[in-house]
Length: 240
Length: 111
Image (cartoon, rainbow over all chains, first blue to last red; front, side):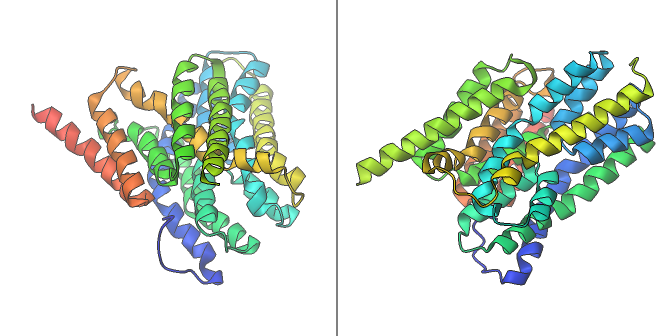
């Protein structure tokens, strides 16, 4: 996707996004269904489960919150933990600024609402590969990527609530999530600095895996970004 | 679950608003203003800094096997990364990883 050689004319930035977002339907379907099923099992009404999915649209945080709610944790703790899981998206938000900062505020607000792992990674990979894209093209592309994923996320949550049955474990769909995340990030590894950042992310992430609500991941990501930037400076100096 | 309806809706709405504010944060507030070059340098590594750390525990200790290391899933993960780096194409990496997963599952089932 990042390397498709066909030059896209301005108008089709949206459709290019739709095409690149379509594979993630595979990921949205099992997880959205599962959320619908366990939200209902946990005792949420249809409106509450749907409200969750539509207002939050963040799989990992939704599952984390639900788990804590089943354990009757205090409301403050549920909110703190779930929002901590989502804090990585502040990093996503910051890294989109150089590409989308010039877009009108309402467009940035729409993108913020739709800024989850899949839309973010797919879009940022495209922006990096094609620096010639204009700001409106970038906005269109982002909305394009979200277009096939979001309705399935909402719709399949509904199916999960109503049908009350998740996709059987034997299909190993649990592993579709790691495969898709790895498939998204692997093509972006294109220099020693990227390799270093990824390696630091994995090692610190594993080391701090016991820390609550994704806080270990935030530290791992911070360390990895710093490592990547330092290696980049070092390679530039050696090249100069 | 012992929350009242109001409490459940409070959780849902605060989480929705909070998540939006996290996503909007920098993009909304900084907008078009220039950022320091070292910050830009750091931000270039956001995707490769977040995703590998997020996925690594899922690969080493899969939920489906109750956290037991699973050579089949490990193999699928390695195949996905290698194909992704080699082809630079997300779709090929997904297909190759999924094919490896199901092929290896099939082979282990036969053994």
